[in-house]
Structures are given as C-alpha cells and as structure tokens.
Image (cartoon, rainbow, N blue to C red; front, side, top):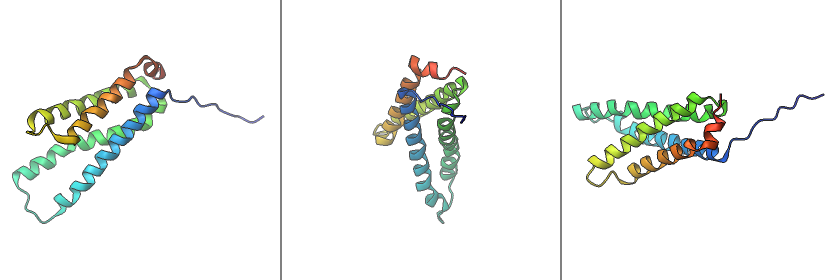
Length: 135
C-alpha cells in the first residue's frame, strides 16, 4: 500500500499573511539592492553616511527574519506567530516614527511600511490563525 500523506492546507488568513510577508521581504531586498551602488560608489563616507549604514542593519535583520518566518509558518509552532508579531510590531513603530519625523509624512514607503505589517498582525491575530499555530 502506498504511503500517502495528507498535508493540511493553510487557513486563508494565514496564507494571505504569508503572501504579504513575502511581499514585504521582497520590497525590503529591492530597497537594499538600490542602496548598494550608493555605498559602493567613490563618494567619501561622511559621518552621516556611516550612521545611515549602521541604521540599515536593523532593517536588514527584519527583512531576513520576515523571509525566514514566512517559510516557518508551515511548522505551526506558536513561537513563529509570536515572533512575527514582534518583527511586524517593530516595522509598525519604525513606520510611525518615519511618518512623524519626516516633513511629508514619510511618503508612500512609510505608508506601505505601516499598512502591510498592520494587515499581517490583523490576519494572524484572528482566532482561525491562532488555532493553526497550535504546536
């Protein structure tokens, strides 16, 4: 007899949250890709440029974590969901800070940086999603 394993399908809320996390990670990677030529150029590194480079590190860690966590959703571990809440919470706080300190409100990137994590948190906070992460 053949050994056929049935895999449980992700609930729609979890699947949508996972897709949004992939989009977030992809946008983050594209943003970093656009910054590589700036820092690789022959422009002298000023103190402000060094500080900007240093401030990119938490963003890079967040992007990497989002990518890894989006793949770990299938493990159904509750700590994955909680870690997603923490990473998305930092994203929300960062976007709010940018919108509050920038004269124009941070523009489209800050608005996107606020909306996408809020949607992920909303989707994963639903009871159906909480039930999925039962291990």
